[in-house]
Amino acid sequence: MKYPAAFTPDQEAGGFVVTFRDIPEAITQGDTEVEALEMAADGLLTAMDFYFEDKRQVPLPSKAKKGERLIQLPLSVAAKVLLLNEMLEQQIRPTDLALRMDTTKQEVNRLIDLRHTTKIDRISEAMNALGKQIELSVA
Image (cartoon, rainbow, N blue to C red; front, side):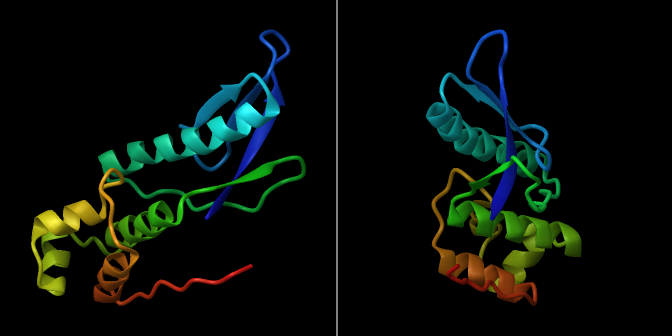
């Protein structure tokens, strides 16, 4: 899951301001292009917290426009984004998903907690319980 980011030179302070069209909460900057790239990845990941805390749909990445760079979310975070979005789309509460998975509400809450390390297999099981599958590919 790669999000397009605009790297705009900061005429006053120097460096680059990084913004994401799809995730307006993600705004960061770096003094150099390399630092701006590192900060972009961190800023995108940090912005995901807002969606998860508020239980809001995370916008999926759009196609990059000319001049934009793609910033990738870690695979585990991308899987959790897909899970959260599917739960919200189907209006499935953690309690409901726990029943479908024959587990506890606490475990489901950990599945949609960005700070909790989760095995991808468990997220896949949760998606299966929602009638969906996670597929991986190499590009």
